[in-house]
View 1 (cartoon, helix red, strand yellow):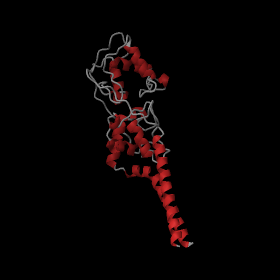
View 2 (view 1 turned 135 degrees about the vertical axis):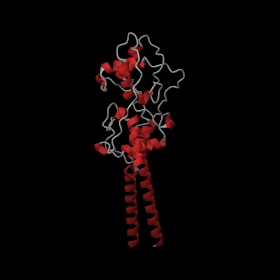
View 3 (view 1 turned 180 degrees about the vertical axis):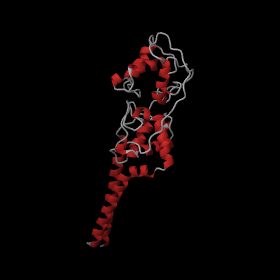
View 4 (view 1 turned 120 degrees about the horizontal axis):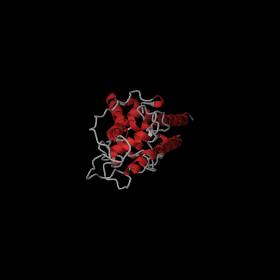
Length: 276
């Protein structure tokens, strides 16, 4: 029947259009990002992400971001990861709703910026962040390391998570009294080896990090010179999130959409038969 063929053809066209729409949403969002948003995303990336993921997204102590994302909705995958973090991993939650410092608008800018990369890295390089020189400090007694060089290293590697004065941001408060007979050894071990199942990764080269043992010693010496902050709330705990959740949400969305298209096609077919 010509009418039935037309209905079936219309159903197939609708299904194909829906699939194309779903597959294209993620890339479309990146392509439609305005230059101001991408500039904001590049700045936010430099200030918050480059220390772990590298200035070009090739990875440092964090995952590689300069890649083609294997997801129907890569924008949702990246957004959920930034906003909620990944439980029991070095990726903390950055969204304000989960205790982080970034607003939804700022996360949107980061997502748009990252989605412009692909395998070749950023089309718009992240700016270089410069820090004002810190006051000269006296080395703490009986501690190996240069705290003044440690201050430079702290700005380059630790401020993002622990705050400029060690007050805590998405990481723990470091400006405190350390309850340990040898606080230098406790701090050095945490920096060198990281803390398992937490946002604190290993920084020592012997454990796959970017810092030498001497640089770790300098960081320890600097941290022990930080003035104690009297009243600081504990660092926020990232909300648990499954790393596969955003991808499964997209798959579920596609299945539901496919089901609706099939139901619509069957209904149109039944209606045509009754009218015939």
